Length: 515
Ligand code: XMP
Image (cartoon, rainbow, N blue to C red; front, top):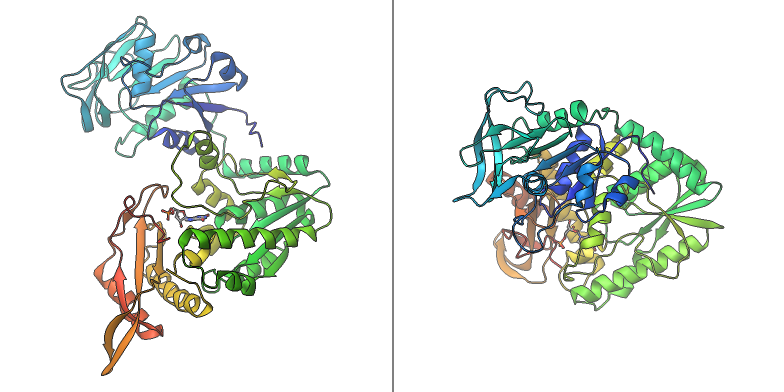
């Protein structure tokens, strides 16, 4: 789906860690924003009709061979430009200023002073001395002609450069990160005052807009949606339902590998509360049969993925004249799939990971949103917190949290232990600060003693991680009291478990899931 909104700010990605964050920050200031690659041409850029351009930071030096630069013609388009860190150096370098190699770079919190008497629009209304977050080696030493330096630090004589006439601005620091206290004000000054973007982009507008576009795309057609219980497919379904009502049919394939009570919750939320037509496929038996004797993690993932698709296909064949498939694709998936060249660590299976020969036109109404924006949309559409704030859960479900063969009995044990972990995390108020917290059931046993009796049973491993995007993660420093209550409840309440361990591995080298 193409996002045609009144004003779009394009963030040009020079390979920064923070490029996505910049787009988010622009949206937080109520202006719609998208990322584009740095080799975009002036003509391609004009076609996107940006109201302003932001140049991200990047890991290179403008002096090295093959350093990413901007199509020079972009500077002459008259579109307001704001460069951050490397982006500011690109402005200085390409417009005739000087970027020098420093004796030493500047990293972390740095004090910056406004230059006396310099006429600054970016820093208007801010204190003359402020703390900014730096991360650079090269530094702009001379501003190009027509520009004035309006602030400096010890190692950066031109920490801020401004050209009011051409509306081109740059800062050597990172206004987008939380460690720069006045960063959002500076970005706001650029967007609202300098580029004159109106702060009108809100989730409410997004919903109205999306509803209109979905209705136009689908017409009188019929849409199928595979619900996983996860937030993305749930929000996508609620949004499409708002647009086309009874033309939407959801399919929920119950694998038997969901968490405790999750299947019922999906049916309850969508069928009863939202009034969405829902086909509930009870496929547990077929999944368990197929998993008999399968121990290897990749074989398991493949088996679950295959049978899932078959069940989904069978259910959708029964829906007459379905010609659209709804997918909860998010913006990070869209931009990453263009550039990602990562080694395959695990074969992921997602609802709607479909075989090539299924002939559906895709409906992807969340393609332009970040995860937390999707949550906002979900809340506005009246979805319950348990769905909107649900932690990520792998497509193959508990199947990849049971090491070795997956059986009904083991799933029941794990569901119970997992429920306790989640209940205790909720009781401690940590649900939203922890990325994922769950239980894993390994295929080992250990000796224990319970009430004078020797036991020989399985352990439960608790895994809790903090993360921004699941690409990297750290183990959560859970309070000892919380670990203790989880451990004693699991041992006392879950049959077949006599020991609890806590996983203290970050990612990398570990992955979040155990398989
Ligand atoms: P790993 O274990 O690779 O997981 O560190 C990263 C994130 O992805 C989730 N995950 C999956 N999600 N289908 C999914 O939709 C899958 O097959 C799958 N496997 C892992 C995992 O829970 C974590 O959030």
